Structures are given as C-alpha cells and as structure tokens.
Length: 347
Image 1: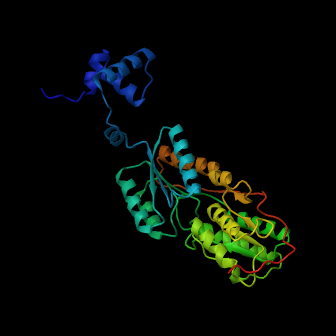
Image 2 (image 1 turned 60 degrees about the vertical axis):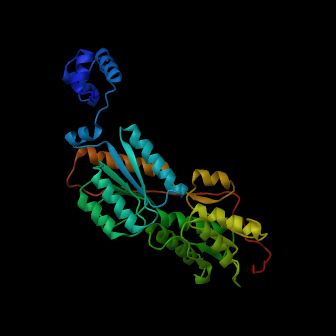
C-alpha cells in the first residue's frame, strides 16, 4: 500500500476543526484560540504534516527570505555583518540565504541571478567592487535591495555605510600627533570606494599637516593577511623607513605586526601600527591594536530594517535613503610616540 502525503484536510479532520482554522493557524493570518492552535499542531505532529512554504510564498507573493551577498566570508568583518543581518532578519520572521562572491564579479552576478530565481523578498548587498553589471541587474529585478559598506551615487537603491574618509583621516591624524612623519600605508583594492575613501583620508591628513605625500610609503594591498606581510617587507626595505604603518583593515594590521616581530622589531617602540575595522575576533587576537572602530552591528541592523520596510511597504517607486554612520578611533598600545633612534632597512 502506497503512503500518501497528508494534506491540510487531513489535519482539519484529525484536529476536528475547519480547514480555515488550520490555514489561519499555520499562516498566522488570523487570531486562533490557544486550544485550537494546540489541537492543530498536535494533529500535524501525528500526521507528519509539513507545510509547503514555497507554495505558500508564491500564493502570498513572499517567501520570508532575505539574500545576503558578501565579498569574502573568510574576512571577519564581512562574517560579522552577515551574522548581525541574519539575527535581525530572524527576529522579524525572515530566513537568510548567504552568498560569498569571493571578490569575483562573475560569481557575484551568478548569485544575484540565483537569489532572483529563488524569489527572495529582499537582498542586502556588499559588492566586490564597482561592478556596474551587478547594480544594473539588481535594479532591473525590482526586488528591494540595500547596499551595505559601499556607496554608489548613481544607484537608486538604499545604502548604509560608514564614513571611511573620516575614519582614515582621524587615524592618520593620531599618528601625526604622536610625532610620526614617515607613515607607511598598506591599502586595499582600488576597485572599492571603501579603500579609495580611506586612502583619500590618509592623503588629506598628511596634506593638512604639511607632510609631503610619498608614493614610496604606499603598498597596494587587498585586505587579506598576506598583503599585510608583504607590505611590511616592502616598506621596511626602503631607504626612507616608516616610523608608523597604517593598514586599511585589521587583518592586514595583525599580519603586519607579526611580520615586524619576525624582523626583531618592536611595536610600537620601533614601528607603530594602526588598523581599521575593530572586528571582535581580531581584537581578541591582537589586544594591543589601535584601530578605527566601525559600528558593524548598527550598520547591519539599519540595513535589515531598511530592506524589511521596503518589502512590507511593497513600494514600486521611492526616494533613495542613505544612512552614513560615524567611525571612532580606538587607541591601544600598538601606537606610540615616534622613536628617537633610527633602525636600518631590513634586507
């Protein structure tokens, strides 16, 4: 005898209630007494009834899911953002689908299409770079989208990001106040406005305090630890050695400190180091790291609120909303006054 899949009618019969009552109980579309709710759920357990959430979503025009696209889930900064977004969505009844683009534009585009086909209700998007094809595809989809940690002037989608220019300016200003004039910079990928804004903050702080910009003090990194190590190796071979190094994220800063220690250089006695992000797990690994704190939880919570509001209001036309959050400088012991003695270039 072939087993049959239990239906809503079977649940109503076992619970001795109407089909309408079962429907309202499962979908939460009308208040049902606690007694009837209990009978319905007990009947569902007895029958092993599973609601077809996809079919329900298609009927109601929603799937109660939010897509999250991040560039690199091995980066604790992006992992933290994704976790906070997932938590905020869950509290409001939404599940999350996490996609990692690996900083690859084609993979990013593929995941955008996957989320569109899965009919997610909204997307929270951190792009890998200035990929106009991704932005165009999302705008054509008419799915509510919030861009996080990035700024696209021409995009019509909501945005929430931190003032990266100000954060880098204040970090550089802090080093200058300690007496440093030769400040090395390990930058991030030039394709992101996050990195370019921080670079501009660094450059303008030097200019404001009368320090000439020196291209030999710059190493083009990619926000990954290896570029922090390579950046230090290159900067410390220069004939014009830096007395401080500003890494544009914490992963590179932690790697930079480790590399300096391998060179038998002390931080900050020989070289001061400052990072950017203040990510929880990296702060624990490098308790002494001076860094720029980004309000990650606030950014994620605001992004979640924005996208859920767009989903629930079902707006087809709207005015773009932009939330710019402010960073703060966290001074710890990896930065100190400029050394009084000189060290030799590292071979």
